[in-house]
Image 1 (cartoon, rainbow, N blue to C red):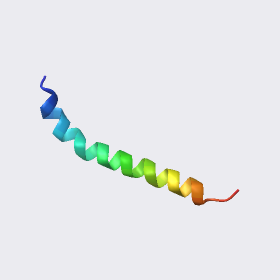
Image 2 (cartoon, helix red, strand yellow):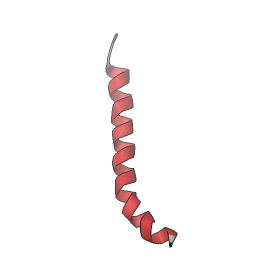
Image 3 (cartoon, rainbow, N blue to C red):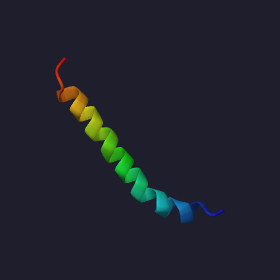
Length: 33
């Protein structure tokens, strides 16, 4: 297995995951109990 082959594939997913996590964090901070 070559690391470069899956790296390109995962780059897209990783970007989405990071974006989602950031959004979740922001939303949780904005939310007031």
